[in-house]
Image (cartoon, rainbow, N blue to C red; front, side, top):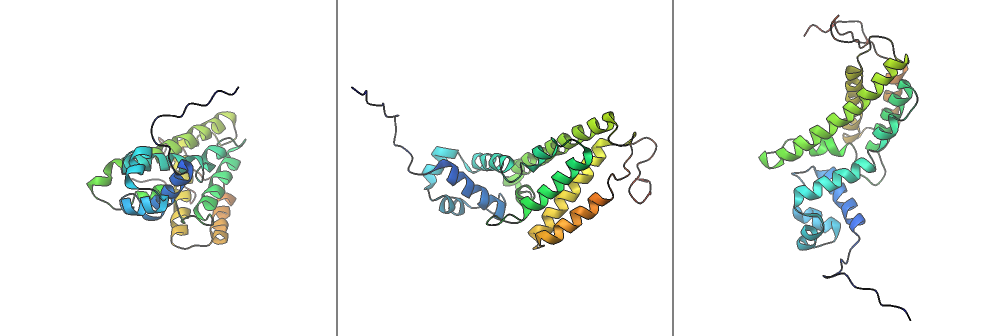
Length: 220
């Protein structure tokens, strides 16, 4: 004789949490944090405001969950890139991933992190700080990986891994901004490949002057 399963207390949710979170991620990606209104979010998610609060918390809580989903999905190319065996392959995987993520079919163009960081008032300050911290973590991840390449002899002695990581991040962000402005994936891919063609850039450790690809020193 089968024992009946116990029913969890409370009314069961009548929606798919993962699908709803994916829809919220798209709204934040398209409109930014402050530009995404609660009606925009609940309409896209197909749920009431009460259900949203019960499942995800307030708007800031929802955004944090949406950012985590973005990091594990469209933006996972960063984690994948640092697993590559050489610094060139790391940079290639990262920049190609930035192009791909910024031009996904059926998703907003550009980068959720950059779009959500755009102009806003005090109500979005905590989110802007969250996104700045998230980008810093990605830069640190690249910097640590490039330091390993310096230690292994894969990058020239004296290369500054922090500056190199910032360089790659800056190019990736620029590609995402261009994508948000309507640039085609094929054109962005050509730009990424042009950057990679001159790898590695001459970015030396601070102390004897920072050198850049054109040979000029940092006079700041």
